[in-house]
Length: 438
Ligand SMILES: [Zn+2]
Image 1 (cartoon, rainbow, N blue to C red):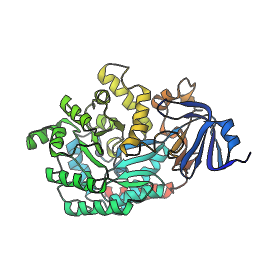
Image 2 (image 1 turned 180 degrees about the vertical axis):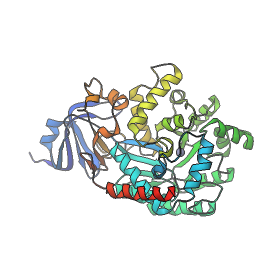
Image 3 (image 1 turned 30 degrees about the vertical axis):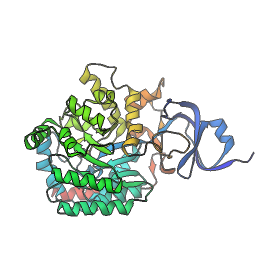
């Protein structure tokens, strides 16, 4: 029998497909060809059917779809540890905004590349980003071989990047057109938050997103102070305010959504808004506990993000999954809420949906994108194994990820990055930090 050629064949894995049935294959294999999954099945079977360019024996590993970081500001790796232990508004206004006023395109590029390295090294294959000089984030993600939904942050006051918001909207439209045919990078329209963006800006952002059929991303109801500020200004809570503006829709990713009442949650559910939940950032900034179990009960698609490195302070979604699964149990005084499988599905399947890619991403199925990670389960802290999902959420760390493929390309092999010169990137970021400190 002649064998079918393929690019990569992963064999002897514990394959966790994350399909609708939750299919798990012991001694499984995945064949990858032209960036997509060609076949999934038993190792013995696929080894006889395929002739791979690269054969990867991943004995002792669990293979699953790559994790999706649904909300971050990736270049904020530059400000990791710059200022901690402050209230959100003080932290933003006294430290983060002044530091950001000194940003330039080159700094954002190096910070973003460092973030991409950190994400690949911890099993994240796709992310949704909001920042300044976002064209450099797109460039860095492309160079790293990552999948990304990016967007320039828009607000009413002048930006250190584009100046007036008129320029910001024009810049966003140019960026959309520039990347529209790229297989990995896509662009969203991203108004910052209801307390920094006027109703007019939200309406114009929505029109621009509709014109180009792209998603919209915004921070929403992050904490009590924001809700009070928006109520004072517009007489409504932030979610109802955006509802009245007509911008709640199924291609809106709303970041945080911590301070919600029942009506807010109903509005998010009715309008099929996607929520990006960031538990570690919410804990660190003392924003509170987002009502994730109640949102999921209403059928809201809740994905998981890390937020920026200045409020987390890392991009490791394995840690984030553990935190997410645990804090809601304590908040609800109920250990049955957010079981491990739910949290893993939020991070993979809901993340794929947030990016608008649920038909091609987030499952190990023929025809789906070959965004795959192999997590090494041979470490003491992952021994013994009764249920791999339990370990993935409660015991594994990002550093347990051994291989990482994005669109079929091996971007990390045996912990070595193949697309990023890590020593160079870290040296550049250290030099930027020296300038920032001075
Ligand atoms: Zn954020």
